[in-house]
Length: 170
Length: 104
Image (cartoon, rainbow over all chains, first blue to last red; front, top):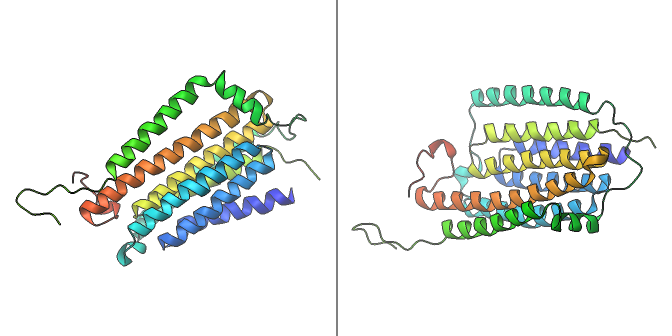
């Protein structure tokens, strides 16, 4: 209970800091804290494998990608791009309305479910068997999808040495 | 120690979702928008795993779909960063308000 309150408030505060910090590098660091907090919540819920995957893939992979993206595009004028006040107003109204809606639905959904079932969550073994039997098709689709995405990303981000018409490229 | 219900987790998920939406709506840096999308996907994942814990018939499915979402988020981040870097090479900006054409 105390653990959940601490982790959840840390996660929520760092998620808020991602939005509110002007500097994009600071946003990236706050996002890192948010992802670690979410993975701690998975451990707290008893889903160890999902928590470990979150740590490895998100914190180890995706965050490195994002930080590289920040560093490669880091120039002084882009680090702190200002947002116009009317955009803030529209965004806050939209997000607030959505949060109220979702919170109401959550309160209604969670009414009868105050106690967790006594049996523990299915572990890594059951997950693996599930992926190779019932969920074989989604598993295969997502593996091919990942391959296609990575080839596409490498193709898009390749260094171009194509000369423009009439102009010698560097 | 009292047992927590499903509601706090769902509320945290809703809060993360709202933060992600606000991030997408207000950031003008393309990498910042990508961070907002990551927040939204994490909110969905928190809901999946919480439902896997508290709804008995959803115990395996919740974790399976959370893992699928994590893999999809990794792929999405890779392709989005490739596009952003390509755009930056062509136009020398990551301001989405000035990104009205993607052709190099």
